[in-house]
Every structure is written in C-alpha cells, then in structure tokens.
Length: 123
Image (tube, rainbow, N blue to C red; front, side, top):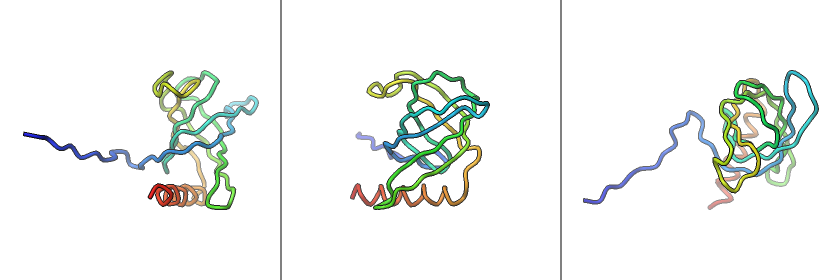
C-alpha cells in the first residue's frame, strides 16, 4: 500500500525564502555588520552571519528589499533563538533563527505584501 504524506507548515507564521542583505548590531552595543537573510515570516527570520554569537543575544536588525518596483526596509529588534553551523551546507558562516521582539505593524504589513509578491512571482 502506497502512503501519501501531506506536507504542511506547522509554524504559527509560515516562512518563505528570501535572499536580501541585513544590517545588524548587538543591542548591548557594538558596530554594524552585514549578513544575509535566508527566509522570513511575520514572527522572525533565518540569517547567515559571519559573527559567532550565543542564543539569547539580542540584535537590532534592518533588512532592505524590493517590493515590486519599490525599495523598502523593515527594522526590528530580534533575539537569537537557535544557532547552527552547516545546517544548510551551501550557506556560509553561522546560521541563526531570530525571533522578532519589537517590530512595527507597518513593517509586518510589508512582510505580508512581500510574501504575496513572492508567491505571485513563483506562479
């Protein structure tokens, strides 16, 4: 008997793939660094960063992206929820799962529009 498995997103906020630069700095001080976003949702994002940090560290983050023909930005305060090296083998550096701690509702609406725009481009 052949079994069929239904794939579904179990997360509260479904993630979708992105490939945008992120600027970040530690909330407790320090200089700005640049990294790369891998996927994003209304609840957080996955990023690749060169700097080694610990789970629990808090970051101030900014991500620039195109929304149609418009360049836009979201800003948020995030917390590192998980850290891995080599989780996705072709991604450089450290890979982090970040949870949004503070993000403006208008920036959340931009993420929702980006998700719809990304889905439309895949069709």
